[in-house]
Amino acid sequence: MSFKINPRHQQTLERILAIIPHPHEVPNGIQTPPRLERNSEMLKFLDELLEVVFKLDSEDPITDCPASALAILPTRPDPLIALAHSKLHSYPFDSVPPCWRRLYTDASIVKAIHLIKCNIATIREQLVCPRALDDIDRSSGNETTSKEEWLDEVLKALDMALILTGAPGRETLIEKLIITLQQHIQDSQQPPKKRRKLEGKLGTFPAAKIDKRLEVSLIGDQIPSVAHLTLSGFERHLKDGGPLVIQGVLTQWPAMQERLWSDPAYLMQKTFGGRRLVPVELGRSYTDAGWGQSIVTFKEFMEKYLLDPSRTEDQNIGYLAQHDLFAQIPSLRSDISIPDFCYATLPPQTATQSGSHNVAPSQLEEPLLNAWFGPAGTVSPLHTDPYHNILCQVVGKKYIRLYSPTETDRLYPKGVEDGGIDMSNTSEVDAEAAGDILDTKFPLFLEAKYIETILSEGECLYIPVGWWHYVRSLTISFSVSFWWN
Figure 1 (cartoon, one colour):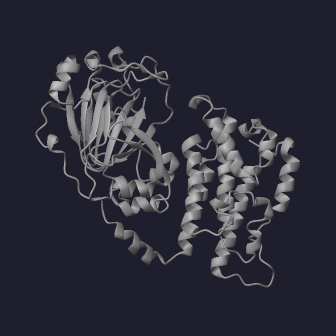
Figure 2 (figure 1 turned 120 degrees about the vertical axis):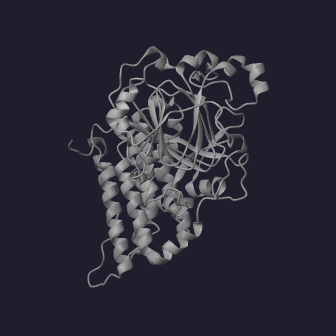
Figure 3 (figure 1 turned 90 degrees about the vertical axis):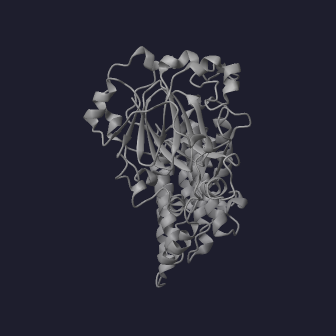
């Protein structure tokens, strides 16, 4: 697609670009020290990114936003972020007009770039923050701030765009900006050996004992298990359609070899020193009273919920659950591989496989990946999913219980709740509740047949579409689910 500036904004953009200097230019005859040369290269890179953002195509969805908003995009991103944020919450999530998603994203990128510019020293330092940019929120970095503060603001702006909007059309640009900035900061700091020594002080995750209730032998039928299954062998298994534990699939994953996800220091490094923002579920299970959600830095999530040795299983439950962490931080995606099983040819779906879902899901071009990372005690309540699932256990152990779709009538599915939210894929029953509670409130549940397993590091579990599953972390756990159809 060829790109050109929308005629409606041509004059405005030319005027703005004319007053934004190029701080990477160095006066003739001055020898640039290595640090300032790196800064000049970084500032040139930032200018190039701004040119991409401001180069509007007539078909770009952002052109549907008011011309008055686009006119101030290069110099006043903060009010545009506030405006777009209000629009994001004025519509159902799936109905937000694309222009507002794009405006929030582009304004966030512009803000982040200006913050970086305002905090990188150059020979012509007075040109980094020209007067045209003075109305950027000064608390966000236009005043002298510490490196930690302005970097936090930069990552906050970019991550909020990724989390709230998906950053349509700008995912690669944001990834490139973050990677380049992190490398620039690292090159400007202490030597690599010293950095590695400091990172090593994080140690390892504290050991967690398996819940006493689950130390006993499994009382139900165990899920069948097989080692080193081929794709053709898996397709033959699909004719029966039952769940299956598969061993030996993850042995070559970098996440379990040289780039260990069990290493807190590595995860902190991959999240820009823990500055990246992540959505966290607060509470044991999303069906419990008092459950909530929050967006926190990865460092806060790690320190509060995973690295605190005084934390008990029933306290401070925080769960990074069902989040597409790999779209937000693509460098982590290179640590794993999509199992070949996700590309298996499926037999015709039977009626009993539909579970509680009345509407057939859309056909997926590629598997949907989600991260599940948290302490012992996190729970995914008994529910079904609209897709086949390969659940891969990278760190720790999980107890998993499965019920066939034929048991649905005994599992007490929820209905439509307040606000019109359809919860029919979730059971009303706490699968591990005391027997007397179940006998009183959910007597049929005790008659439902199930199979179960403890999924250990390096193992995968195939969960057929429509099968009810209950999942509980026994230790600190990091899992990846692959939805496919």
